[in-house]
View (spheres, rainbow, N blue to C red):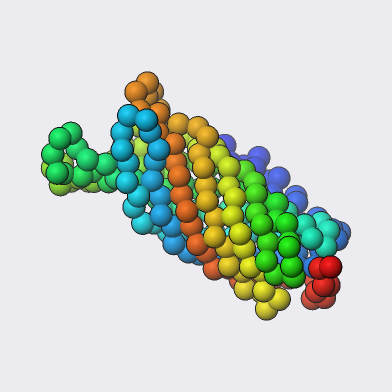
Amino acid sequence: MRALRPIIALLFTIIWSAPALHAQRSGIGFKAGVLGSTARSELRQFRPVPGAVAGLYFPLGISPRIELQPEVLVSYQGSSYSIGETDLRAVERQLYVQIPLKVKFFLSNTFNLQLGGQAGRLLSAWTKDEKDGTRANTSSYADWDLGLVGGVGVDLLSGWDLTLRYYNGLTAILADDDTYFPYNRTLQFTVGYRFVQFRKQYARRH
């Protein structure tokens, strides 16, 4: 967690400067949802597995049609694959702390497009299969996972936010790997609520 401290400090600096920004929707919210995740590799066929994500988000309005939104999330994700030529499958699971930073472009008062980057710090990893059961393998994974995020959202004036987002990893997730080079892929749907709002007035987006 020590490596995350500079990033978290930067996030809090941005958040506490929010009242000075030109914002209709600046605030703090909690979100949670479901995801499907897998890994992409040229030499191994991975299949998706279900997972979950939850955490805090900080929408910061910078103009009538643009928001900057950093987030701090915990993501339970992974992938599965066949073991050799058998019918047995192994499930790889990872637990990440993720810090997405998105720019949101509003096409109407509520509907928006989202684009940004994401850094993920590995907390734990383990493998489960029918032959050997469950075993920890955190050391087999790279500490950091970096990539791009994009999606769509609906931010309601009531404070509820709906988001559908895709993540495309740009760094290989295995440590000391010179064969498979897998990259994380996730698709997530979340529901959030802004329980703190720095401004109550909502200007129309023209």
